[in-house]
Image 1 (cartoon, rainbow, N blue to C red):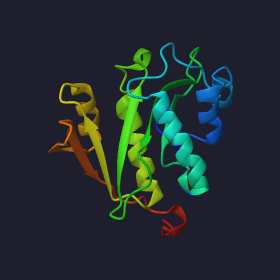
Image 2 (cartoon, helix red, strand yellow):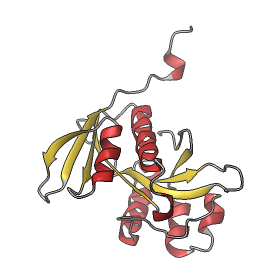
Image 3 (cartoon, rainbow, N blue to C red):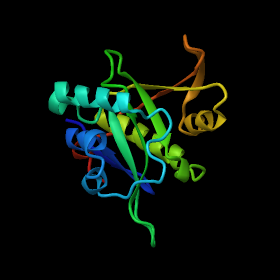
Length: 188
Protein backbone atom coordinates (compact mmCIF):
# COMPACT_ATOMS: atom_id res chain seq x y z
CA UNK A 1 0.00 0.00 0.00
CA UNK A 2 1.25 3.50 -0.84
CA UNK A 3 1.22 6.57 1.45
CA UNK A 4 -2.24 8.19 1.54
CA UNK A 5 -1.32 11.65 2.90
CA UNK A 6 1.23 14.08 1.50
CA UNK A 7 2.20 17.47 2.92
CA UNK A 8 3.34 20.59 1.11
CA UNK A 9 4.06 23.95 2.78
CA UNK A 10 0.41 25.12 2.60
CA UNK A 11 -1.51 21.99 1.64
CA UNK A 12 -2.31 18.59 2.96
CA UNK A 13 -3.12 16.14 0.18
CA UNK A 14 -5.45 13.38 1.26
CA UNK A 15 -6.18 10.33 -0.90
CA UNK A 16 -9.88 9.82 -1.51
CA UNK A 17 -11.46 6.88 0.27
CA UNK A 18 -14.68 5.11 -0.58
CA UNK A 19 -16.33 6.86 2.38
CA UNK A 20 -15.26 10.33 1.22
CA UNK A 21 -16.31 9.72 -2.39
CA UNK A 22 -19.65 8.25 -1.30
CA UNK A 23 -20.31 11.26 0.91
CA UNK A 24 -19.33 13.71 -1.82
CA UNK A 25 -21.57 11.94 -4.34
CA UNK A 26 -24.57 10.88 -2.27
CA UNK A 27 -24.49 12.64 1.12
CA UNK A 28 -22.93 16.05 0.43
CA UNK A 29 -24.16 17.42 3.77
CA UNK A 30 -21.74 15.01 5.52
CA UNK A 31 -18.81 15.50 3.16
CA UNK A 32 -17.19 18.52 4.93
CA UNK A 33 -17.46 16.78 8.31
CA UNK A 34 -15.83 13.58 7.04
CA UNK A 35 -13.18 15.59 5.23
CA UNK A 36 -12.56 17.76 8.29
CA UNK A 37 -12.52 20.89 6.17
CA UNK A 38 -14.68 23.77 5.01
CA UNK A 39 -15.86 23.70 1.40
CA UNK A 40 -15.16 26.55 -1.01
CA UNK A 41 -18.09 28.59 -2.33
CA UNK A 42 -17.69 27.11 -5.81
CA UNK A 43 -17.24 23.35 -5.70
CA UNK A 44 -16.43 21.28 -7.73
CA UNK A 45 -13.78 22.94 -9.91
CA UNK A 46 -13.10 22.61 -13.63
CA UNK A 47 -13.26 19.13 -15.13
CA UNK A 48 -13.92 17.54 -11.76
CA UNK A 49 -17.32 15.99 -12.48
CA UNK A 50 -19.82 13.63 -10.93
CA UNK A 51 -19.04 11.07 -13.65
CA UNK A 52 -15.34 11.21 -12.77
CA UNK A 53 -16.13 10.71 -9.07
CA UNK A 54 -18.31 7.70 -9.88
CA UNK A 55 -15.48 6.15 -11.90
CA UNK A 56 -13.06 6.74 -9.00
CA UNK A 57 -15.50 5.14 -6.55
CA UNK A 58 -15.95 2.12 -8.84
CA UNK A 59 -12.17 1.74 -9.22
CA UNK A 60 -11.58 1.97 -5.46
CA UNK A 61 -14.37 -0.53 -4.80
CA UNK A 62 -13.06 -3.02 -7.37
CA UNK A 63 -9.37 -2.55 -6.50
CA UNK A 64 -9.60 -2.56 -2.72
CA UNK A 65 -6.52 -1.52 -0.76
CA UNK A 66 -4.27 -1.80 -3.82
CA UNK A 67 -6.27 0.94 -5.59
CA UNK A 68 -6.01 3.42 -2.70
CA UNK A 69 -4.01 6.50 -3.63
CA UNK A 70 -4.09 5.91 -7.39
CA UNK A 71 -7.14 8.04 -8.17
CA UNK A 72 -8.53 11.17 -6.52
CA UNK A 73 -6.70 13.31 -3.95
CA UNK A 74 -8.22 16.22 -2.04
CA UNK A 75 -6.11 19.38 -1.65
CA UNK A 76 -6.79 20.88 1.79
CA UNK A 77 -5.43 24.34 2.58
CA UNK A 78 -4.01 24.20 6.08
CA UNK A 79 -5.73 26.42 8.64
CA UNK A 80 -4.10 29.82 9.00
CA UNK A 81 -5.22 32.63 11.24
CA UNK A 82 -9.00 32.98 11.00
CA UNK A 83 -9.21 30.84 7.82
CA UNK A 84 -10.12 27.24 8.69
CA UNK A 85 -8.73 24.18 6.95
CA UNK A 86 -10.45 24.37 3.54
CA UNK A 87 -10.85 22.14 0.51
CA UNK A 88 -9.25 24.16 -2.31
CA UNK A 89 -8.81 21.64 -5.09
CA UNK A 90 -8.51 18.08 -6.23
CA UNK A 91 -6.06 16.15 -8.30
CA UNK A 92 -4.57 12.74 -8.61
CA UNK A 93 -3.73 10.01 -11.00
CA UNK A 94 -5.67 8.28 -13.77
CA UNK A 95 -4.88 4.94 -12.13
CA UNK A 96 -1.85 2.87 -11.17
CA UNK A 97 1.26 3.11 -13.36
CA UNK A 98 1.48 1.01 -16.50
CA UNK A 99 4.20 -1.61 -17.09
CA UNK A 100 6.74 1.15 -17.88
CA UNK A 101 5.98 3.09 -14.68
CA UNK A 102 4.01 5.82 -16.44
CA UNK A 103 0.96 7.46 -14.90
CA UNK A 104 -1.17 10.45 -15.86
CA UNK A 105 -1.67 13.28 -13.38
CA UNK A 106 -4.60 15.74 -13.30
CA UNK A 107 -5.58 18.63 -11.05
CA UNK A 108 -8.10 21.43 -10.56
CA UNK A 109 -8.29 24.37 -8.13
CA UNK A 110 -11.58 25.89 -6.94
CA UNK A 111 -12.33 29.29 -8.50
CA UNK A 112 -12.16 31.17 -5.18
CA UNK A 113 -8.62 29.87 -4.50
CA UNK A 114 -6.96 30.44 -7.88
CA UNK A 115 -4.10 32.86 -8.40
CA UNK A 116 -2.31 31.94 -5.15
CA UNK A 117 0.11 29.32 -6.43
CA UNK A 118 -1.94 26.46 -4.99
CA UNK A 119 -2.15 24.65 -8.34
CA UNK A 120 1.63 24.64 -8.58
CA UNK A 121 1.84 23.40 -5.00
CA UNK A 122 -0.81 20.71 -5.59
CA UNK A 123 1.06 19.34 -8.62
CA UNK A 124 4.33 19.44 -6.64
CA UNK A 125 2.65 17.35 -3.94
CA UNK A 126 1.41 14.85 -6.53
CA UNK A 127 4.93 14.58 -7.99
CA UNK A 128 6.22 14.01 -4.43
CA UNK A 129 3.54 11.36 -3.91
CA UNK A 130 4.41 9.62 -7.19
CA UNK A 131 8.07 9.48 -6.15
CA UNK A 132 7.16 8.17 -2.68
CA UNK A 133 5.40 5.13 -4.18
CA UNK A 134 8.64 3.88 -5.73
CA UNK A 135 6.54 2.64 -8.65
CA UNK A 136 6.30 5.69 -10.92
CA UNK A 137 9.09 6.50 -13.38
CA UNK A 138 7.30 9.01 -15.63
CA UNK A 139 4.37 11.40 -15.25
CA UNK A 140 2.21 12.63 -18.10
CA UNK A 141 -0.20 15.59 -17.98
CA UNK A 142 -2.32 17.42 -20.53
CA UNK A 143 -3.37 21.06 -20.91
CA UNK A 144 -5.54 22.86 -23.40
CA UNK A 145 -3.51 25.06 -25.79
CA UNK A 146 -5.31 28.19 -24.54
CA UNK A 147 -4.81 27.38 -20.83
CA UNK A 148 -1.53 29.20 -20.21
CA UNK A 149 -1.87 28.95 -16.43
CA UNK A 150 -2.07 25.13 -16.51
CA UNK A 151 0.95 25.06 -18.82
CA UNK A 152 2.94 27.29 -16.42
CA UNK A 153 1.98 25.07 -13.46
CA UNK A 154 3.29 21.99 -15.26
CA UNK A 155 6.48 23.70 -16.45
CA UNK A 156 7.14 24.98 -12.90
CA UNK A 157 6.99 21.37 -11.72
CA UNK A 158 9.60 20.05 -14.14
CA UNK A 159 7.29 18.90 -16.92
CA UNK A 160 8.39 19.49 -20.52
CA UNK A 161 6.10 19.99 -23.49
CA UNK A 162 6.05 16.90 -25.71
CA UNK A 163 3.70 18.00 -28.51
CA UNK A 164 -0.04 17.32 -28.75
CA UNK A 165 -2.25 14.30 -28.23
CA UNK A 166 -4.93 12.99 -30.59
CA UNK A 167 -7.45 15.50 -29.15
CA UNK A 168 -5.24 18.50 -29.85
CA UNK A 169 -4.37 18.96 -26.17
CA UNK A 170 -0.78 19.73 -25.23
CA UNK A 171 1.08 16.79 -23.71
CA UNK A 172 3.62 17.31 -20.93
CA UNK A 173 5.96 14.72 -19.40
CA UNK A 174 8.55 14.50 -16.67
CA UNK A 175 10.76 11.81 -15.20
CA UNK A 176 10.26 10.75 -11.59
CA UNK A 177 13.09 9.59 -9.40
CA UNK A 178 11.85 7.24 -6.68
CA UNK A 179 12.22 8.79 -3.24
CA UNK A 180 14.69 6.94 -1.03
CA UNK A 181 13.00 4.82 1.60
CA UNK A 182 13.82 6.38 5.03
CA UNK A 183 14.55 3.00 6.64
CA UNK A 184 17.04 2.06 3.90
CA UNK A 185 19.21 5.18 4.13
CA UNK A 186 22.60 5.03 5.78
CA UNK A 187 22.84 6.92 9.07
CA UNK A 188 24.34 10.42 8.81
